[in-house]
Image 1 (cartoon, rainbow, N blue to C red):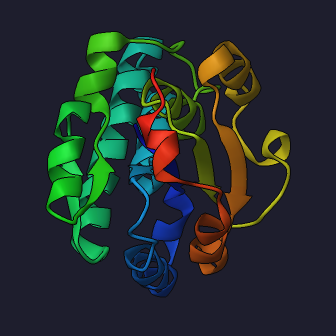
Image 2: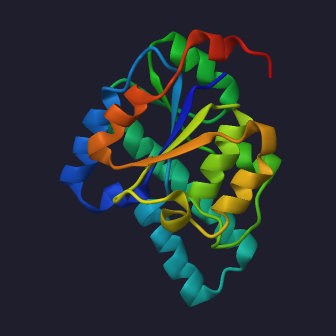
Length: 199
């Protein structure tokens, strides 16, 4: 049982000082909760968009290359967030938690096996984070964005559909910036009883 999936927006990569400040904040996340970081695509996904624009990769190739971009960012986050570790398989999350580490999920292998979402630029790491949170039965999905706004205004076009499709396993969504991420996560109602409830 995961308490929080925290999707770390790729926009943080655009400024090193902002990225490092966010990494320090993420290293201070509460330790009484099982929190999984999910990376955005950021500059790596932007590069895929540009290559797709020039070479017309096709929806399938562009989709998987953009998911691989998330894996690239996962390694950056793991290198900068204190006590973080890249995890490629959800089965390894318990090991990371048991060692007191913050897992950063590199989702490519898992998504490639499941292939749960449409292959389109309407689907970004926001919708992928919904699917991950739902699959992990996370109570909350926190989206770390450059600016706060209603989820429908700051997420990709497929986000609402992905959330409604999650049905009973849909997480509660919160949006925050890097500067208030620890406060937002600290305010979430999480108890050990939540983790003990049956799937």
